[in-house]
Amino acid sequence: MSAPATPEIPHPSASPGRSVRTTWTYTLGSIVFVLAVLDAMLVSLVLEGFTAGNDAGSWLLLAALLLSVATQLRYCWFLRAGLGGGLPGAGWTVALLLPAAAVWAMGFGSAGSSLTHAVPLWLAFSLLACLVPPRLRWWVLAAGLGLALLPAALQQGAAQVAGALPDDDASRMLLVYAALTPFMVITSLWWWRVVVELDRHRLAAGELAVARERLRFAADLHDIQGHHLQVIALKSELAERLLTSNPEAARENIHETRLIAKQALEETRSLVSGYRSASLENELENAREVLSAAGASCELQLAPVPADPATHKALAMAVREATTNILRHSDATAASITVAATPSGVSLSIGNNGAPSAAAGTGTGLLGLRERLEALGGTLETTLDGDRFELAAWVPSKGNLS
Image (cartoon, rainbow, N blue to C red; front, side, top):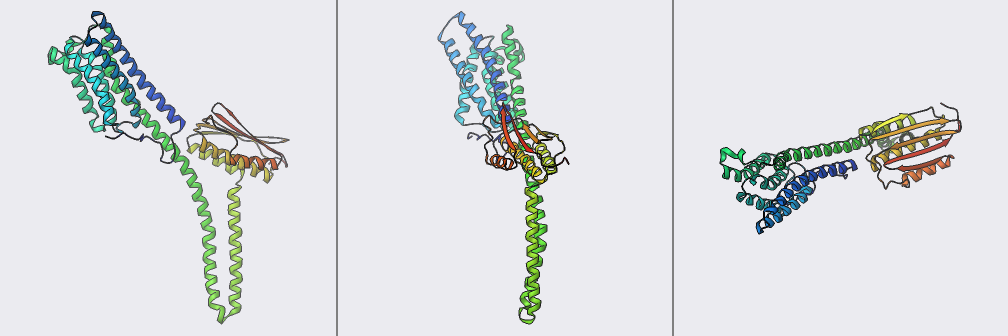
């Protein structure tokens, strides 16, 4: 099979969020750690046997074991394909099985230690079982278990395999932990798939919120333009028919058409103006809904704001810009919006976690917002502390508290 090209991407138009990448790092680290501990125990048991005689067979066993350990740990990176994600290239699969099979084969001539020699092959089959299709997973594990028990069965007899268990506690502990490895790896990858799926739904929820707003605007625009354009078309057609028979009536229809077109233009401008300069209350509520849909809890702390249209518009634009930045440039799980009013002015503070270390307050939208606030005598400041980003806007008071 060809190598899978990391199919576990949360969304076709977006790269995985930082929380997803962190979860994969933790999952991969856990799997590698468990395998490394088991392999270290096995290597130590092999090294203990060197006291009896350092023959060529012992060195060959150690070399095959170390090669098997290296390929196992490297093979773990292919697990990002997820459960049933497909095997990588045939070369990698051969490199995983061949040294493990060599260690397993040496167990045929090692009385009392055949089961420990089968551990690398069992671990290799455990990794393969995660990537093959689900219908083959248990067959692969069954084949690995059968091969692991085969040397002991041939030595002791199929009915006395239990008698082939090693006598020392370290070897018995190794076998117990190795037997549980498939369960650990499969459940870890299942949890990774759950996190990826949740992140995919989080991104989809944010996009649906934006699409819903666009549909609302499109519906309002259609309601305004559809009726007026239809009337304009009818009036124009009627005027065209009356040009020769009744010029005065045609002139009247043309005049009405001009008025209707002017009215449609004014209503369209009013709609767009209302969309661009939505009220502060609506923007705050929309911000909470959109952020909640994107998976970030939003806490609002609001105080009365002076009833000055310019102040309301500037603060509303600040809320909209900050919300857009949170959705586009962070993996926020918590956000807060605070509006405080004093006799000297109104302050707006919007903070969120999950901001990347490269976040900065020099984007085009923030520059335009800063210019708008400075035109009113206000200020705009942004700070980044760890992964927390905060936008602070201040506008001087120009009216009474509403």
